Length: 276
Image (cartoon, rainbow, N blue to C red; front, side):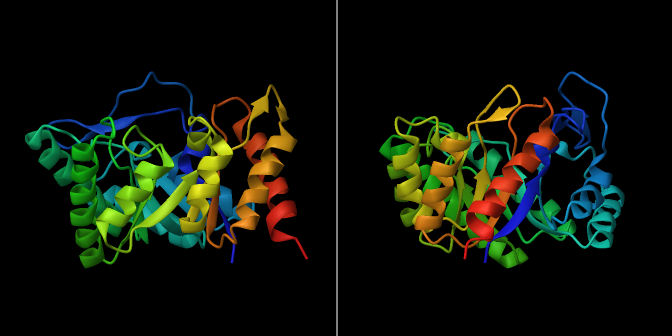
């Protein structure tokens, strides 16, 4: 059954376009240029629930604090809104790093974020495969890291998802090789926008969608107008693959992002959720 979700990236601009990273003490520090925020992360669960969407993904860099007090407050807001945090999106580190010290450091950092996910009541986390060029060695390191993290996540009660994203896995053949190499119940998020970075977006989607458990559903806007024909073509591939999972509606860019997201919502509901 298809359900709609919202990623905190969908409202990156409304959140003030922050990019929080931990400093040496572990405190979260905003590394991005500040801009006025229209919405706080604590307000986000109620905001999406008011639109009838009850699944949420949160980017780790949107968390302004990770102390137990703040995480408890955010969990309370999620629960009060009747929202489920389906994934903490871990956008840090390089799980295919050639340098063993860097590789082990980034695996350890991912485990810290998995523990944060548990405190937020998340069902799982999304990790990417790494940012090194997809050599056999890089693919093997990615497999080994994801296998270790999937096992660690399972011990914590979390599922683990990966994505067609950075250099090691943006191409479908490399990503599928990694998924098969992990040898665990690794889930897959297919990102429309990242598929567009390959030579053939639609061939990439056709290769990956049969394995997909979630989607990052992005459309192409020129000014205020969605390229409806292109978006409909992408959704037709989703339908043909028999996809069943959650679809996170995401508008890249911060210009009028919520209105554009609602345009995507209308198309997805019409093409995939109201079909007879």
